[in-house]
Length: 94
Image (cartoon, rainbow, N blue to C red; front, side, top):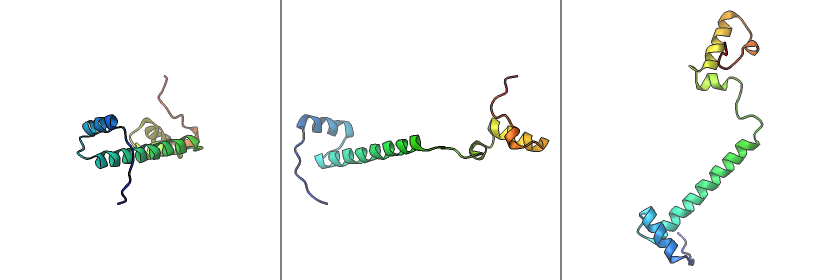
């Protein structure tokens, strides 16, 4: 591991040590760096999801939640011989 000399606000470092229950400044800095990387990855993932054309694929709800209302409607349509495109997915209003 590489050793670095960094100036850090002592008050902030003490507060971080108390909050994180870490003994050494190195442990506090390591934890802070892990958190920065975690947040950056989350932001990148969220941005990728926002830019995606379609997050879901046809039939995803039926595949993920086979007991959902949509899956029930699809099974009923198949039983009645209707095409899946004719099925109105969602809760009934009547």
